[in-house]
Image 1: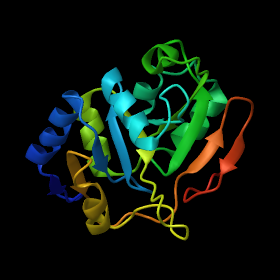
Image 2: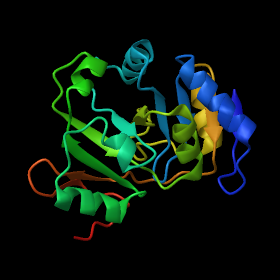
Image 3: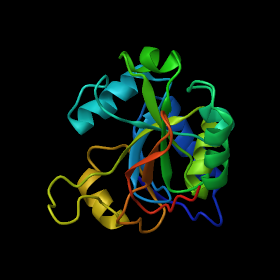
Length: 204
């Protein structure tokens, strides 16, 4: 199923549809402020396993991000943030950044792994923000890779996304064309280190 959502005039009924499907354990495709992503409800282990299967890896090995509504939601899954890290995140979020932080004890339990770190995303995208807020907890997400294209490794056009995934993913949200570049990945576990330069320009 494909639905169109205008980030400037959100249809609350369609947002509710997306949230309902997440709560049922379904995987959805949705836009962010960088790449399109596929994701599921963090509280549904079966859905996380299915998401990992789609990526071709074990859930204990894959590096998913948690898409949150705000830093308060994110803080439920990470160890206490020091002042400088909180300030850095507060200055750049919402925005096209993934912050790698020390995970608290909930993350290994949720992913059946010994993960000690977690990627946090708070996209500057009204569609994603609205869905996550209504869901009440993070979405486990992975960027929408195009394994068949050696030149352009990510899907960004809704029409191409639908053609490729319509028989695989129950709900695809068309929020307009995505970007060709991912978020900037910043490791804050020991100082500040840019792991991948993406759309976001870090200032500190």
